[in-house]
Image (tube, rainbow, N blue to C red; front, side, top):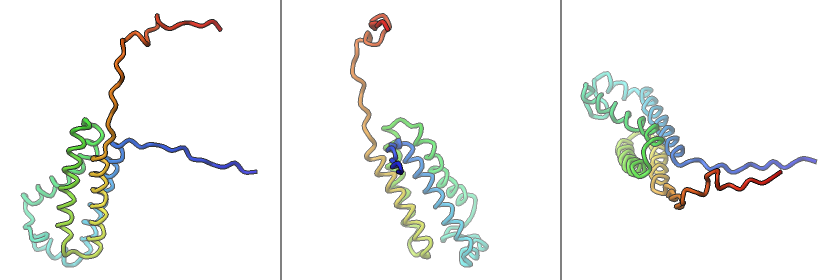
Length: 157
């Protein structure tokens, strides 16, 4: 006779879900851009000092770095920001990054569009989980006497 295995349901905190989604989005972000280095046209543009019509200079690289720093920080900030701020920041940034990723994918090769579609799906999940963030219930008001030791009845064994 075999015993049936059952799995206990486990609820993952919304902060962990959103943080993991930012992490996954960043992995796709990095790999899709990295795979572009295999393209001769992209390498030629880089050699010519341009990427996507932008001149590669200090300003461009600073902007590109800032663009990557924000979601990188969201991995941590999602875990520590207060819920009202957290919800708002995740919703706004999720939408902004989704729009920029869609705009950047226009006219790109299929691998880039494919990776961008998954990035947008992950960002949509971030917005969804942020929008539907569970409300915290306020603790019931107590007199403060309920849990004090001198009010607990001792029972004999």
